[in-house]
Amino acid sequence: MDGFCAQGIVIKRKEFGEADRILTIYTQEYGKITVLARGIRRLKSKRSGCLELFCLNKMFVVRGRGFDILTEVESVRGFTEFRKNLDKVGRIYYICELVDKLTREEQENREVFDLMVKSFELFEKIDGDGVRLDKIISRFEKALLVKLGFLPKERELGENAMRNYIESIIESKLKSRKVLSTV
Image 1: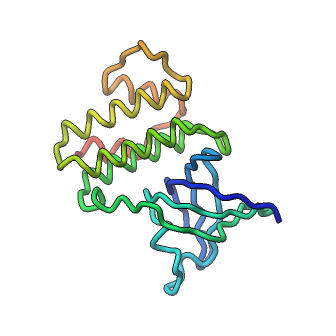
Image 2 (image 1 turned 120 degrees about the horizontal axis):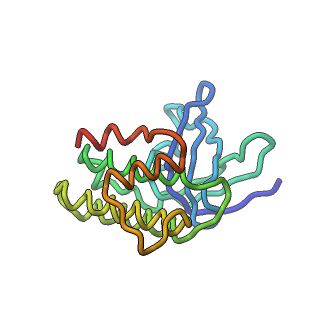
């Protein structure tokens, strides 16, 4: 069987069957990939802690017929500091939703990966200052759209205009936007 190694951040997960989970991971090497993590929901699973949302992992994936199968995983960074703050978690979820909705499967973009990691690191360093967190989100939105070719570098949009523009690109409402409006 054909397989590959990748380093990536878990950006989305979905329950599958009794003990499995489908994970969407944004990788440095392959962009966004979807993999099946077999047995991950079992109590005795040794990999479940590594495969939580927002975790950066090194993994080995084997190509499968329906889904690629995650066979090995090693935690690189858990980004545990911002998990203690619900406001930060909501904003990180928003970042992950943007990356998921605006990128295509298996289209490598190291700049997007690096942008995500740097944003996560900033969220860990900054105390619960909502204004500073909002600035990180605004910079992330613009940088992501520029890197993906949706926005010229010199164009400026306000916060609401930016989110409306993003929703017009993906042709649907962002689910995490509700979380941001309550923060």
